[in-house]
Length: 75
Image 1 (cartoon, one colour):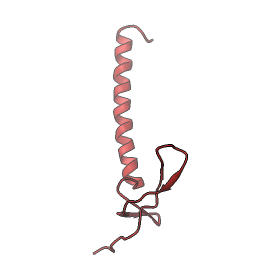
Image 2 (image 1 turned 60 degrees about the horizontal axis):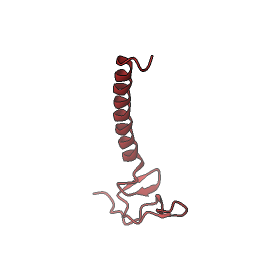
Image 3 (image 1 turned 120 degrees about the vertical axis):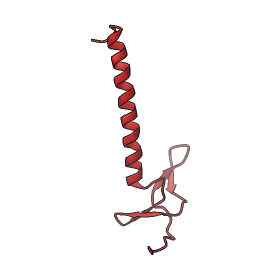
Image 4 (image 1 turned 135 degrees about the vertical axis):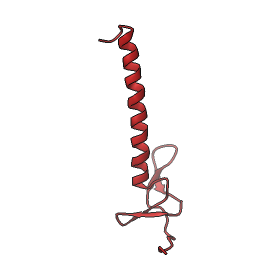
């Protein structure tokens, strides 16, 4: 089986005040490009989630634009 990861996630996390950051405290689950990440900060998973959000936003925006055009508010 694969090697057990005992490393900490290497992602930087900003504090609630936004002025300071620290290393994520979660246990790493994947290794990407030589760096360890938890499931939250895994760059590939983050990209997939962002793509889904972008597609949803695009669909909502197109629907809103079509609605405005049908009302004659946008040309």
